[in-house]
Image (tube, rainbow, N blue to C red):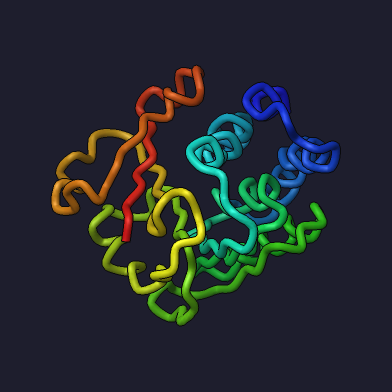
Length: 206
């Protein structure tokens, strides 16, 4: 996991082992339940793991923070973030049961005890969270509408509670309605690989 260690130099031995195990664990699961394209599985460290960890470059979560990953798919960004922040509780949800089966299997193999994974839509969740994280599940205004009820009003972190959304391409028209509440950060600020040149992080304060 040279790329992860390149950008995160204070990992513990256990974290290094967990990140190093991810590619082979996902390759095994992907052979049974396809959650990552065959083209992407060869570049999982860059396109999935490091991409997810852009959120950890943007902010550091306080102990006791609660995070929900909506539309987690095979566990991104939730699983890499759960490795990075072992003292934070994560709920990973997806409407497709076989994807949740993969998430549960990966978490178990890694020995991650700070993850819950359930098959659900965001509208069905009644808990409150400090942050919602996701990777381009749908158009941003639609995502906000589906998930904003999940955000707690009590702030426990340096950055305001809300949505941390990883998205690529041109989406200026999608964030215009939110004015100054939506801040956009190019991932090229954090990572030098070509893949990240068009990728961005949206932080919507709620």
